[in-house]
Image (cartoon, rainbow, N blue to C red; front, side, top):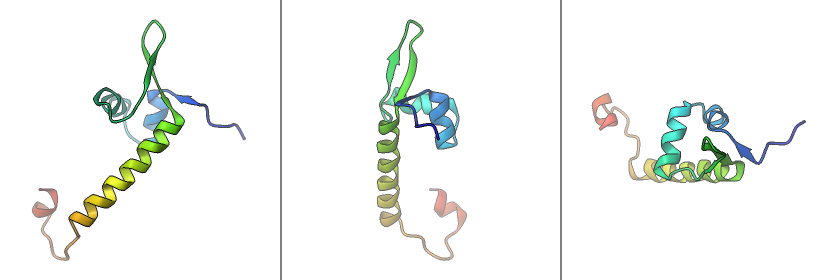
Length: 82
């Protein structure tokens, strides 16, 4: 079994997160997901450990959100999306 590479392309990260490369690029440009820019064409790379840290942080933020906004039986869809 091949080991995970140290650095991932934005497309690799998008595949891991099951989202688009454009969404990953936005995360990087906002500073939400640490990355480095390399080469003459400025290709972005995300360190695998940074991605794991980001995922853990998102779990923590989601847990806090759920605790602050408990699910209530019978809520309408309108109140859930607000």
